[in-house]
Length: 228
Image 1 (tube, helix red, strand yellow):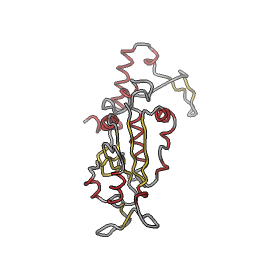
Image 2 (cartoon, one colour; image 1 turned 90 degrees about the vertical axis):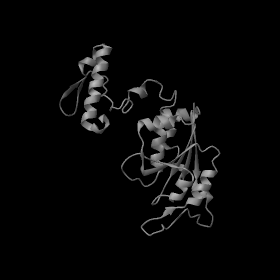
Image 3 (cartoon, one colour; image 1 turned 45 degrees about the horizontal axis):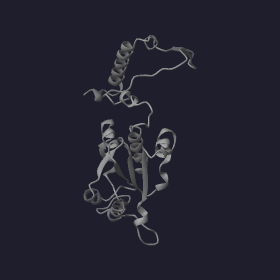
Image 4 (cartoon, helix red, strand yellow; image 1 turned 180 degrees about the vertical axis):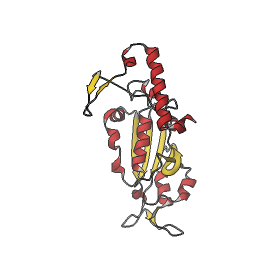
């Protein structure tokens, strides 16, 4: 299984960015995933190739034009599921990531300025997805985050196929804490920090129970909303 990302952007050189490194970079070389960054400005005319204009009704900032975004979208042979990265969108959860990762093609629209003309979102059936309750200078960083979350779920990318099933949000809880060598560590705070004895016991049933208990405690403390 592989996935193709079509990225509609004013800054195509921002891709693949960090996704060209490490495990995702190796997966790109293997063609486990692929991408094409389409420059929306290529579909504009005139000397300055303007892609935005002032908003109807007044207000600060500029709005990206619907006609140019549609031309860029229609240039894609297989757009697949179309997503506009927007702070007002549906939250990007791990459940949604799993759903998107099973899609052969995704088209990601990266807005700039004050956003994009609503009409192209309606006409081209773009879904709006948000990576969090904050505003970025553009949709490109959000697109990279969505891509990263999907790529790491593709078969063979992570190496250990069981890893995604034990991570935060995979079972509705935050992930349990991890420890490695040395067993005892003298930290700069002046204290000696030790690995919990249960993790060195070799009793897998007890270790599993401890991890579940720790995950529940962390979730109750930091994200009680997940327990609802």
